[in-house]
Length: 289
Image (cartoon, rainbow, N blue to C red; front, top):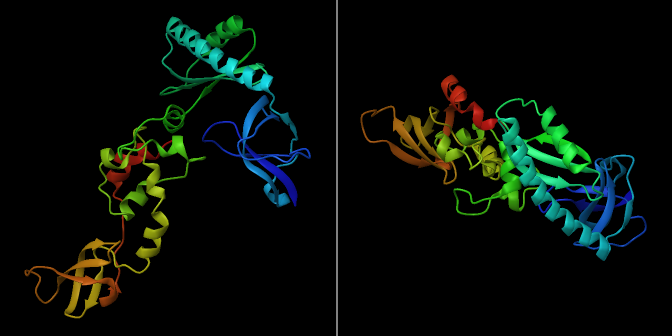
């Protein structure tokens, strides 16, 4: 077992393990640590805890120190510098006529590097832009292309549900979502209804997927042949959450369909949830990051 602390570098971001270096820390404490991109100031999201050696990526770096008043002041100064750097970079992008959108700027704590995050439809040749930025800021410059989901996470906003974006408020990492999930949950495959403000599939499709997966194991699907208390029939509609089936009876196919509970029927031949080729082609873009 290894004693670690969990540190975040963004309000809603991934938690990284560090060696507390013999110091007892609490959630919310600010600490200075060494990362792959330089010295950074982070916030403790998980206090001292013993974790298995397998869950730790070696070598585990030690915390340098608890952040001082001077360190916190420097963080605030960096935030001000980032706003100025953002304006300068936007101006340079226009000068070079680059087809890219600047999303965010981050200074490392030690000012050894400035990271510029941007989105673009394709590859962008930004070599001349990097040279200009390096000349202005006299430090290492890194331009990093991100996806539209990452942009939404950084910028934040209000979703179609009327609440702040999940990715910007509590989702530390994106979970994989697919068109198949929307189909299994009985949602309309209308891009407007199943995609978020970022233009990709809504993250919340993942939240209830385990429940739907479990229910689908015992619930007949549309097209299934079932034996009911009134005879055999074909399932023409399913409400998975309520467990109510609408069945067209074989003995009276022209009559109004009957409804039954899942517990009242026996599956003779189950149906399948299929995605048509045109549906896949039409909605494939929604699965991209």
